[in-house]
Amino acid sequence: MGIIAGSSIVVLTQVSTIVPTQPTPTYEVWRYSQFINHVEQRNIRKVTLSADRTRALAETKDGRQILVNLPNDPELIKILTRYQVNISIAPEMQLPKQETTWRYSEFVQQIEQRNVRKVGLNVDRTRALVETVDGKRIWVNLPNDPNLIEILVKHDIDIYVMPESNP
Image (cartoon, rainbow, N blue to C red; front, top):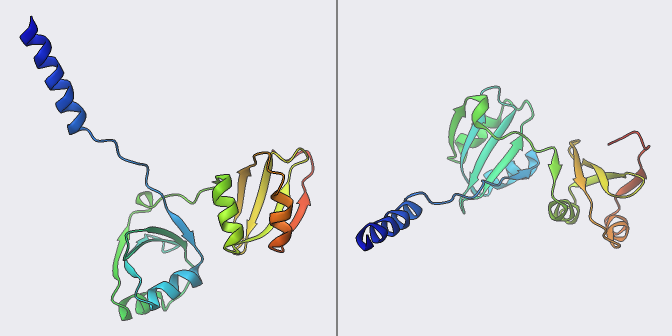
């Protein structure tokens, strides 16, 4: 009986080391101009383009994953080739979808990086609709942060209150 119990413990221990937990991958989102600047600085190792060439998943030399919405730039492949970036094409389903929500900390970080143009607050200031400098619209659930308006004003961001019909 003692041998069976000991074997069970060993098996459980081995199973827990065989199946490691993997963190959810995270991606930064860059503007196209920011992406091209990093390519020209030789900071991008490889790029996977969506089949329709509207998005790219780039990997920096330090291993960060970057998601970029691509304009119709006929020079992109030439630029990537000139700076010796590895290029591949992925089926659309392999690239991550563009997030439509941000965590509050990500929202503040994007404000500080000057990537936010306009913020619409709902009446009770629990949600915000953010418009980025490149035109994306992103929802943020807001904590009760008494400094939020001050942060927005400090960074010259347009602020408005949304009609109550918005979620």
